[in-house]
Image 1 (cartoon, helix red, strand yellow):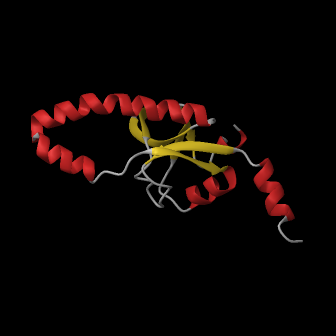
Image 2 (cartoon, helix red, strand yellow):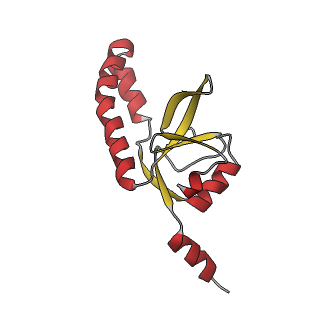
Length: 131
């Protein structure tokens, strides 16, 4: 059969995008930008996924805009030399994409219970594949 079914699945598969300092690492996805909210009386931190690249890029710009102010506050608290050293050792964030099949595999092997898709919480396993 060759690559036919794999190629078909890849061509028809939906993708999601996320902002991170590196591709997903199981089990906790620590490199992925997260969404924090209260859910069911408790605090939930969920990795953010986006339905379009444009939405993920807008989130990345929003994060970058906030970094300048955060840097100035940190310089006041820790000093410029320490902050510059920390920044030199911090990986830059970017936008990554992932198909629904691979996302499902990553979720199965992770500790992630919820994901936020375009700021809407989704329980894993849930209906995120159909959205």
